Structure formats: C-alpha cells, structure tokens
Image (cartoon, rainbow, N blue to C red; front, top):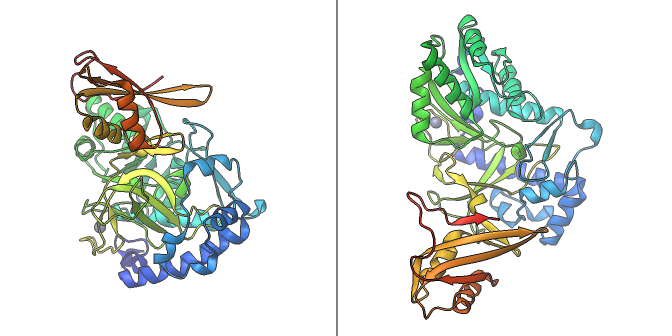
Amino acid sequence: MSDNGNYHNRGIETASREEIASLQSRRLKKIVKHVYESNPIYRRLFDGHGVRPEDIQSVEDVRKLPLMNKELLRESYPLGLCCVARDEVREMHMSSGSTGTPVIMPYTDADLDQWAECMARCYRMAGSKTGDAVQITPLFGLFNGGFGMYHGARAAELFIIPAGPGNTARQIQLARDLKTRIFTGVVSYGIRLMEVLQETGQDLPDLEAGIFGAEVFSDSMKSKISQGLGAEVFDIYGMTETGGVGTLGMDCPAHDGLHVWEDHYIVEILDPLTHEPLEDGEAGELVVTALTREALPVIRFRTADLTCIISRDRCDCGRTHLRIAPITGRLDDMLILKGVNFFPKQIEQTLMKIPGAGSNYQIIIEESDGIKEVRVNVEAEDHVTSSVVARALKDSLGFRPKAFVYPLGDLPRQDGKAKRVFYR
Ligand SMILES: [Zn+2]
C-alpha cells in the first residue's frame, strides 16, 4: 500500500463533492428500500410518516424520512430492528445501558468489512504504515472499542497488540519492548497512561500517534495528552448505533475538525427542538443515516451529540469529506416531560420576562413510580404569585409545571457555574 500514502482508500477519500453526492444518492435509495422491505418496524415508521421508498430519489430527499432516536432502538431490544435473517448475523456489540435498556448492534460479514474500512482509514489518517505496532487498550467485549480497532487494524495491515484495558505498567513495558507506534484507547485511558509515564519517569520512544475517543475531549486536554505521550493525538468518533468506533470519522493531521466518512454516512445538523436543518457553522444535533450497513442501518438517527459542520471544502490533508467540530456536549441536558422537549434555558428565558421575577431559580425534576413532574422554584418580589409563574411557563412550554415563589435572596447560591437542574 506504499503508493497510497496516508490514505487507506485514496480514490474515495479524495473524491469530488459531486462524486460523493451522487454515491450518497444511489446508496440512500438502496438502503431505504432495504429497511422498508425487510423490517416491519421501519415499514410502520415510514408509513406513519407518509413516505415510501420511491419518494427517495436523491440525497436531498433524506429530509422526507422520519427521524429515529435511541428510544426506538431500546424498545426494539434485542433484535427488533435487524434487517437481515438471523443466520446472516456474525457479531454483535452493545451499548453500556447505563441509562436504561441497552442497544444491540448486529453485524453481517459485509458490516464487519465496512467497519474495518472506516477504521482503517482512521489508522492511515493518523500516519500508520503497514506493519506498525498498534496497541489496542479498549475492552474486547460487548463494548465496540476493542474489536472495532482490531478489525480496522487488520484491514490497515498493522501489527496488533490486543492489550485490552488496565495494568498500565505492563502496557508501558509492552509498548517499549514491541516498539508500539500507535496507542488507542478511551480518552481517560490516555490520561492514565500519561500520568503513569510521568510518575515513573519513563517515555515511549517509538510512539507516533495516540487515537482516543468515546468521551468528550477538549482541545486543551488533547494537547496535554499529546505532550505527555510525546505523540500526535487524534480524536476518533463513532457510536454503537452507527456501527462502532471510527465509523463516523476522526480528525486528520490538519486537526481542523473531524472528517466524516460521507460515502458511508449522511450527516445532518438539526435544530434539536424544531428538527429544521441548520446552516453550516450553526451548532445543533448531529443526525446520521448509515448508507452501507446491512443488519441495522440507522436512518436519520438522532445522536444527541451537539456539533456543527465546519467545512465542506477540500482539507489541507487532501480529503474532501466534510468536517464537523469535535463534539461539544450531549443533548441529555435537554429535558423531556409529558412528551415535550425543552432546555433549561427556555425556562430561564420565560422567568426573566415576568416583571418582578429575580434571576435565581431552580428546576427540579421529581420522578416517582415512573411519573415525571417538573417543579420550578424562583425568587421574586412579593406581588408575583405562583399561578402567574405557572401560567407563563405553560404558555411557553406547553404544559403546566408546579411553580413556587420565594422571597428574593432565599434560594441557595453557588460559587462558579450555577447548577440549575436537580433530580429527585
Ligand atoms: Zn483533513
């Protein structure tokens, strides 16, 4: 692959925007037909939205399709959304399920190849060459990290050290003995590795790149890890629902946003409340359509990750696939109550419009027996009654929360960034 430079698939990674759009159009038509014809849940979802496969003719038509979210994937546990016969499934991974029922992602042989292809592009983009030693430290198990990096390293023809997590002293020994060139892991493991190197006064002389992901990653943390490891650090992106680590992309040596593998995924940035598309540069929710997966291709999947499109221009690295900003946060900050989505900020805006209301307030989410109620505590002058507050909130939110008014200065204050939302 020496003539391919730091590309795994130079042709497609540097294809013109027109070529990418035409490939996306063809693949979108095909995948919509596939999910509609093979899975009753998808068929009901599309029928309920009044859209049929023949309505989808080009990439722009993606907006005609219904949105799906993590709830639908959870409700379909274990394999309700699978679009292939069970004997075609070769592997599965699963999200941690820390917030509820887990999500299972099944893979066919072709899906494993697709994953390996995306991940191999990331390895090459990080500068790895055939035969370079890669030390893979995420868990090999239900979590997709270890196996995804393994499948990709096979495709990129690397020397795989399947270390798994933990035992940092042995990791360092292995990396020194086997001349590890690429270290992969979750962000917090990168930090751990850096700390142990510093504590023990060791270094990793052969290390060239660290590929870290699965956790939100600030630029300052990235440069700190880079200095601590003495290696270039890359931010890799992907999630169980899109098919695992590396499927969505990574930043390149220009470090100006994460390239999304657009021949495999259509990404949209939508307003989280109205679901209207946003302009490039505007931050919103990343919505992903998987174009080439067989077993469970998500269609307009709401990732709950907040980002924006930085550029669709050819990058300094030569790649033409669009770039998104590193993920800045999760929409989990958004509250969903009585079927209504809202952000704490909306409550704040409403309260601030009530004459006599103070600036200190609390939003309390009370849950008992699975029923969620919202209670808003606000400081205000004597003439402001709780029914005035509740009515104003009902007009803006669409449901009536419990409201309590306190004299000015009565609610607790905190130093630094104020915590406004509490769960009970
Ligand atoms: Zn680039």
